[in-house]
Length: 111
Image 1 (cartoon, rainbow, N blue to C red):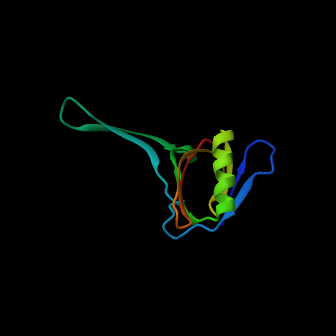
Image 2 (tube, one colour):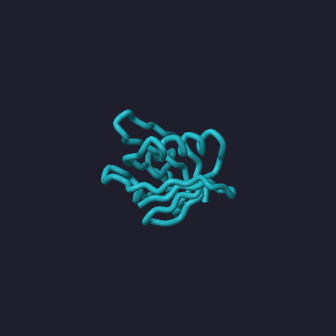
Image 3 (cartoon, rainbow, N blue to C red):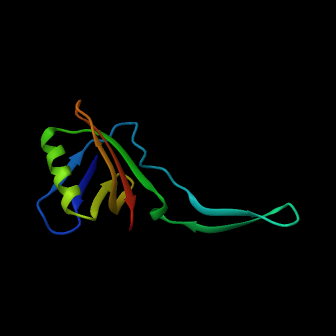
């Protein structure tokens, strides 16, 4: 279950049941490896941050939900996204609704 709402006070929100193809639980660390002059390499690990993650969601949506989401995307910059993995402040990156009632979302986590 996923809830998407606007960051500022408004009556706009949707509750969706994500499909199994969704990719909410993807984690990575801030790592980098650079080559050295002797042919080896040196690495750095700057740790973990949720802001390095993307929330990729696939869900079935109704026409009413599609209209609300379209309005939210066109009029608001930040969104609250609640998932089973946590509560995040996000920006919309992609929203692809299909004619069959399925939609693909991509959120970038800011907090």
